[in-house]
Image 1 (tube, rainbow, N blue to C red):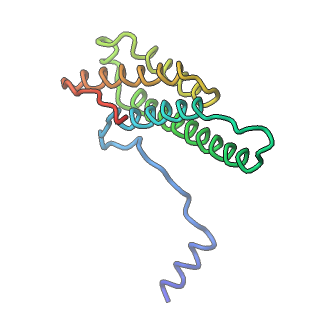
Image 2 (image 1 turned 180 degrees about the vertical axis):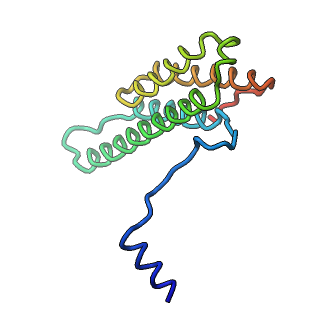
Image 3 (image 1 turned 90 degrees about the horizontal axis):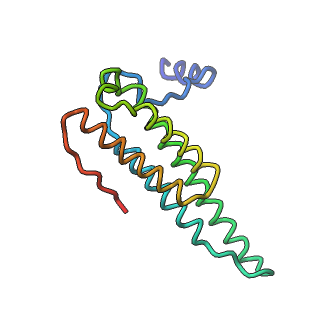
Length: 157
């Protein structure tokens, strides 16, 4: 009976979807997720630029090309947005005023990296994708140095 009532309530008034990471007090931060998503942006940009358009008049090839191109673009944009979100969390939640003393260019570095994420979403630029990867590497270095650790920046690709 109680299960039936709770099921009915859930159908009538479902709980809102939530996401996290985070404004919580866990203190778990790592720029690795931004590295992975930025690498995906670089990879998708390379794939888009290497994709060859089919010969005129080949409808099946045109459909396959458009499908592949659409998928590459969707992944590139999604991963650029995830990179931006991960960087913004580090910038606004992890880094504190005390870090500005050691890294006076901290705000400029993050601001430019966020702008590169946006650029990578709206265009297909190998230069901007590579600049984004370099910015993420710089942020990686700042982050780990702020913790007194020397952690290698290792790309998956």
